[in-house]
Length: 151
Image (tube, rainbow, N blue to C red):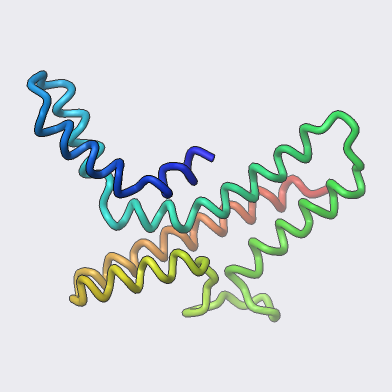
């Protein structure tokens, strides 16, 4: 929920940290506000767009496993489906790595396309490429972690 709330209030948080940096006279408060303001760039926004649905699914699974009277067969099916979902984001039906068709999620694609429209230069394209590569490795690690927890 924290990630979702940050994402939903992104612009307000950016404005708040900008105004706090300008209004504060104490160095340490001003410094913290500036650090947080600098972290509210497009790269971090794209991270939240990509990671929020992934983290929400892990939270959903976690809550299922915390039930006191959980059906073990249902738990197995849920974690198996989640593992398959993570795998399908990165690999095709023949278990070959997808090159340009990795499923980063619709919101991420929309946000990255908007960023590229506003900053249509080589540096912006390189930044998006680097972000996607990091997220692909994150998906691989998430898949690996779920797989090692399957019975």
